[in-house]
Length: 467
Image (tube, rainbow, N blue to C red):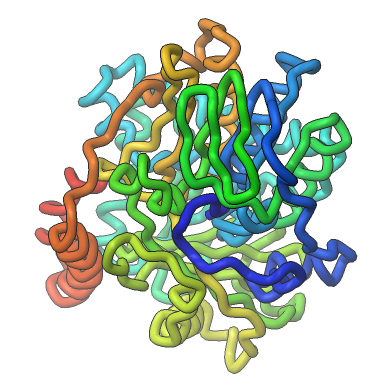
């Protein structure tokens, strides 16, 4: 969610602590969350990167490895890690917005499996690169457990395990009810390819490591236009050889990517630190993330300081792809998240919620994340992660670094490279369609509770969201 366009509201320097629990905790640990100096007029760079989130920073990291003498400039309207890169659920997973079956249908089985292997490898690469950069981001690779809490969810879960076995890449396991502790769980699917981490520690630490290597990060600088060889900002024009647009949901605020990406809000809460007895009862060790098989997505983790950090969808899309700070907080959704946590883990009791936050993630029209680079314009772009970006940004950064340096590798031949999603419809169709999808997923969960069968609504929506 790092911003560099017209969308969203700027915060005064020093006002970033309240963005999320993650920002609050890094501030408590000594990060002042102050803006770096912005541009002070026209300047030159070899590569200009628009957006100081993980896509932009990982791209800079791997570009510096390939071209250590290149002048790399990162342009950020707020501070590094302002957006989704610093506010997300902390799942460094192998999840990709499109399913393996969908990728196989669109690109062929071999390409789909190559994409799955690359995503699995990326979980480890984030840990390796973070350690190399000297970043302690609470990275622990403990896997994900996804609870099946109804007959319909159990059928979906067992089907997912069977599908994974047929493809032979993702080592999913079915755990019987005796191995899981969530309320009403009939079992769960365990995926070892996920790590828990602290997103703000990662993105803020990566920015500092890049500066130590000579990469310039200009904050408080709003990009208004990107063209071949030029990036226009409110503080000067950057003349550059190559440029990268790395804005994710905030790309809706840049005219040239306005209809390429739709900002959809996801919200989170964090509890007070919980006692050891609670963690023993629910069997969530450090490093393990969790969810269930409902259609209106939820996601959680045990933080390094023993809180539950828990998020989910439910906030509506706003007309014209608008992004405003007050959209980050929807009391109805926060109440739903706290109620859901209590339903999953009744022993949580009346534990207090200490932090509430949210923000926009980026959704392409076909829910297909992509990396692109045009050698003619020398402009690259990556995004459309639909909430699966904490690891995917790293793969995007590595791939962009190779594309921008004219390499031909396994990464540059992955099926998401060069993919172009259709543009979103103009308003009012965009507003009606996006919010109808939210209603449909809510209805699908209600339908399954009533009928005990897989939702017909969800089945109809599946092709539209990459399933």
